[in-house]
Amino acid sequence: MLAVASIFSLFPVQAMADSPLQNSAPTLHSLDTGPDVGPQEEKRPSESLEVKPVEESCTPTPPDSPERHAGVAETCTAVLSSTSQSPRSAKKTRTSAVEAVGSVCTITDPGYWHFERLGYCLREMTVDFTLRGEQQQVLGTAILYVSSSATLNPRSGVWSEEIMIEATQYTQQVKSLNIAAAMSCTSTCKATDEHPWDGNWTLTDGQTAFGSVAYSDVPSVGVADSSTVKYNLYITQPGTIPTLPNVNWSNPRAVRCDSALTGGGNTSTGCVLPSITPRLELPVSQYGAAAVTYGWAQWNLPNKWGLYSGSPMTRALDGDARRKFTCEEKSSVPFVAKPDDVVLKDSCDEFPFASTEQGGTDGGKCAEIAPLFEGDGQWRVYEADPSRPVTGTEPCARGHVNLDQNKLAGTAYSNLIQNMRLIEKDPFYLTVPDYFDAVE
Image (cartoon, rainbow, N blue to C red):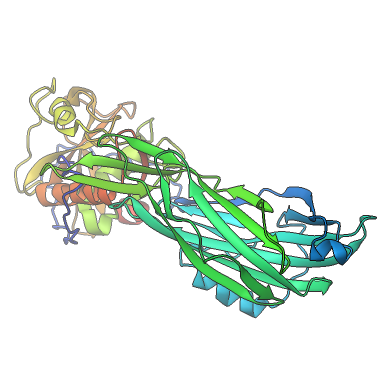
């Protein structure tokens, strides 16, 4: 792969038809395409995590307060697990409300967090609210369903989070509740607008409160900052002034924001969830011989770089220097381009990529291959250097790839770097989804 562009230079990815090349070099030895395992297993670059339950905690009501005069000695809250949640009501209302907090929340199970590289959401965390008397008798109950959703920006240190709280299943003395909320974030991150709504929002049974908060994290140039978003929820009966939050929780996955210098000397800041490893998809139908080279190396060489069954690749910033060892003057075996009747506009394409920490191996140690598109509409992989037979134990591959396809794949990796905010040492996976359909 030719060296990728700077993280801040955008290039459109354009599809290119594969050039039908006949194998006009019969001395080349054909190679196996890999194990007969069929298509790669799909794995979505995301994660879902169950909300951690919190045991009931109680706060005494203030002396001479309206609650105390009504016989309420304590107000108690608990966060329920997804398997112990109370029977649900107003499902139609709740479904539309959850959808309103944002499209990041692709899960449907209540009581779960959902994380993607560029966003996170909480789906219906269940909070149990109880009024208790002097003898611990239950005087009233309510259920609160809390949902939130945030989308991060790989080119900005500012993001907002939508929050929704539905109050339902009121019983006995619980006629209405005052709901207040406040959010914060740690490290250099600041909640620039920490309250989703001003003061208290009074909710009767079945009503919902909506709002948004805003965060900003712009670290110093060259610094990657990791911050945790924290939440405080205040639940009181009307006429009572909240002093401490009833329920506290934190986002279990940290947000990372970093600032870096662009090629033009400007500063660019962006935020992601680094715990989610992104995936680069390079189908043969679009990237031709480049994609065949990567797929062949993944399935035939021992390290399986980029496969979910192997190890992810990790971004390196010194791709130009690494490429010299694999494809250029520092390789112990020079790359010799094939004539156009074998590989049109032949170029050296390395795998693992030069701009990864796994790249930069001496090209003389790589499996030298030539993926060729033949008259029957199938790709076949050949040894490209008879003096160095492919053994299948090589640490890398060096493919003879059409220059345009080589550049196109490099652009796709460059776009992944930018769109998923891959900084140095960040991992990513690579899949060639149609490899086994396209290669014989």
